[in-house]
Structure formats: C-alpha cells, structure tokens
Length: 125
Image (cartoon, rainbow, N blue to C red):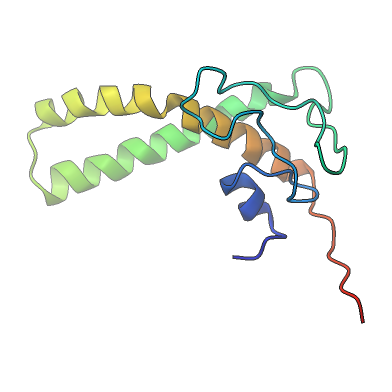
C-alpha cells in the first residue's frame, strides 16, 4: 500500500497531509484516552481542528461503519452459518460496544481525510 494515500492515513492513524505524524495521542483505540487527538500534526503542523464542530459530521461516517458491520455479520452469521437470530443478536450487542472506540477513531480520521489532500512526494532526480 502506498504510504502517500488517504487510505493509508485512515487505517494507520497518520496525518492525512504528510502521513508521518500520529493523528491520535495513543496508538490503541482500546486505551483509557482513546479519544484524545493532537491539535496539530507533530510532524508537519497540519491543523486537526479546522473549525469548531468540524467532527460533528463524522458521526455519519461512524453510523455507516456500524451499518456495514451489522450487515456483514448478519449475512455471514445468519445466512451462511445458519446461526439463530437470537444468538446473533446476543453476540452483536457486545461486538458493537467493543468496536465503538475503534469506529470513533476511524470515522474522525476518515472525515478529515476527505478534506485534506496528501502532500505530493518529491523524489530527488
């Protein structure tokens, strides 16, 4: 995977501009301070808080991620593996709770990556 793409920065917690600095303070989404972000990129200085309320719309990205998760697990568990719907729902609720910090971080990185384009790579001749 190219290290200078939007997908790389979204998946690996990197700045969408330089793909060097970390987006969130902690590496893991499952730590105590999973929601703490840097104000600016530690490497290039890109502003991670463009305006007040900027990340409010990232909840729609999070909603889409949860919807994809529910549909994917439903078709795998109920349609292919013939799991009873009650057992599926009993497993779905804990999985949604456990994935909330991960989807929160993924949604914020995705939302910012939509508006910040990667810096072009200048290779020496």
